[in-house]
Length: 257
Image 1 (cartoon, one colour):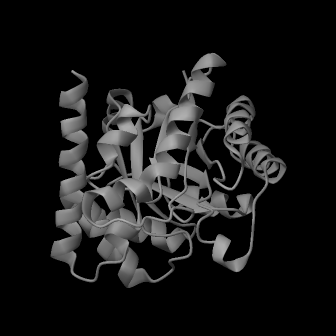
Image 2 (tube, helix red, strand yellow):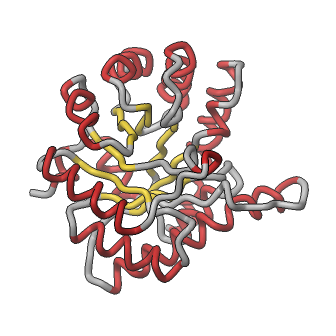
């Protein structure tokens, strides 16, 4: 029995179907009102997972406001995960790193691997997702993903939206924005497969309804979307975006079949 099998049945099924949708409130978003809005939109829009900052009060808030959508907490401080899990978080994640890059904070492969080992030692039975920093060259991203899974990571998440420099309008610009994380999803999922390792890849950072089907085609088992939802102030608009993402993932399944 793997740790992934301990996840709620609906989330496990989405990962198996390669159609999981995670809505990200923000690793540094400790604004309760903002997190509540994101949680409600995630619940009403059909998300499978909500990713919030690593705070027990926010975990309880997200569960309540979403109507029971499973919660993942993100942090780069493993010791903070324990209280969040006690509050009801069903997954922990090392990352997302996008929030740190504007501060000049860069995470290298050795540090991410050490954080993974520390987290696994603290929480041996909890599902663990780890983000692979997009600042690493692609071959190093691939190797790190393999090392992370061998060290106990259950899921691997990609990133890259902050490094993208789209210069076109419309759909082409959205594709340009997503290109780095799509490339990482393809390379990492292929590297894990070649190494004989089974770990779902979540493609995140810079995605939209236009590009989430591309993430699935690139080898991802699901997607994580943050700013496309959490930057909005209108809850109806937030729900509409989440529903649009859900529908886009549904079309990706139909296309594969």
